[in-house]
Image (cartoon, rainbow, N blue to C red; front, side, top):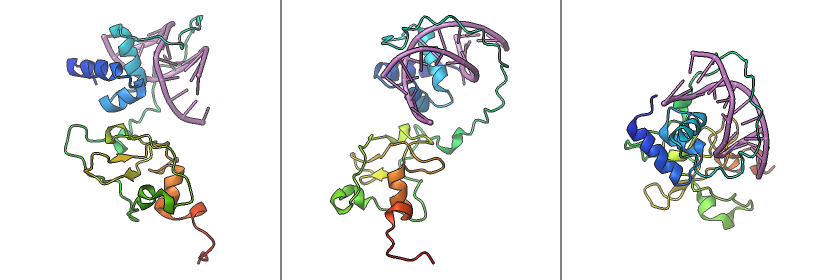
Length: 175
DNA sequence: CCCTGATTCGC
DNA sequence: GCGAATCAGG
C-alpha cells in the first residue's frame, strides 16, 4: 500500500484531529501504526513531540533478520468496509443479544464500563463490538473497550452476549 | 499488559 | 521513501 496523495491528506487530517497513530492506521487501512508514525515524521508534521522523545537513545545496532515471516496479514477479519454502504451490524451472534441492559443499566447489577463511543471505523479485532443504541440512530455506537482474546466483546459484554460464566447464577443446573 | 509516539536502519 | 523492529514513557 503506497502513500497516495489522498491517503497522505487523510493521514494529516486525522493526525491533526488528534487521533493516535494506531487509530489513523486503522482508518486508513493497509498500514500499521508504525507506518503512520514513520510517514508523519517524514512529512515533518511530527506535531508536538510531547514527552516521549526525551530519551537520548544511543542508537541500536539492530541486527536481527529483516524477514517478516510472522506477518500473515489477517486483518480482513475486522476490516470494515470504509466508504461503502456497510452501516449494518453484521457481527450479531446467533444469540442476537439485545443491549437492553445497556439502555436500562438500572436493570443490571453490574456497572457498564465507560463507553468509548467507538465508531464503526474504529472497530478492530480487539475492540468490543457491542452495539449501543439503535442502528441508524445518530447516537448509535459501539462499546469500544478491549475485547477478550478471540471474542468480539469485552469481558463485561461477553457475559451478557453468551449468558454464561459469571453472569449466570446457579439458578439453573448445568445439564 | 495495554497503549502511546520516537528513532533507527535495512530495504 | 518506506516501515518493521525496537525503544522509552504512560
